Length: 221
Length: 117
Image 1 (tube, each protein chain N blue to C red):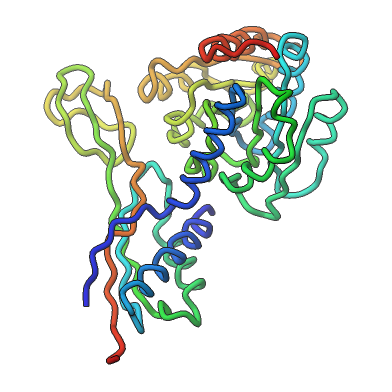
Image 2: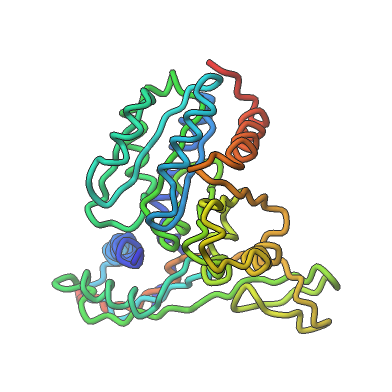
């Protein structure tokens, strides 16, 4: 016999994502979910952001990784509270994992939460963690064809970072080719060209983050 | 490979619905998957098969209906279904399209057998 049912397959995860969102809202925390390929420079970007923001805002970090605590240790050295999530080979963070990490963070002492997703340009885009903004982190050595090949990351991101622009002289990277699909998919999404090495462009991206923090009415705690 | 965790969530609600409807065997599972979810049907089918082993869903067929995006032409305002991000408007030929939707991921039907009592 046939049975008609309509149920969201990720309903359990969506509920947890909503709970996370509610908790963050109640604590007045604005949250960013950084998604990018392994080696795109998500952790380096995080370190630069901490450097630029931590005198004005209290930052907290959730580090998603397949294995090891290397990235979390780097963040820990800055004095910012950080929780490491090891997914044991899992290719993305989900709302459950983030919910558990939130329990371990001193939320009363955080204004801005940055979640560094597992290095992967595909899978993390499908999962709502309860965050405010997804940010796509791409980089010059990955090639100018990434927005065209991975349009979903362009679609879901509220901002896109093109990292490692200090490498432009050494790679055949056509900016026009990089920007064209982004303009077609998300003409209003800002793109920030940065180098975590030379710090070029970091302040523009940080200013975008600050504008989002202010939009939410987040005052430093 | 997020298909595996999606298959886990799917299996959970399939078995829940099966219990609710007193199924003794699940023959077919029908889902709708939007293009934005980035699901590779073969991978999801494989994951579903592996997870269904030794459950009442073992051997069940997974039917995946792929749901396209909704396109809106920024030039002429025409609405239409579209399979990817880089198409053209079927009405005016413009490539300036707003692509929306494609984030559905739902269980929509089950075919089951019921035990006599």
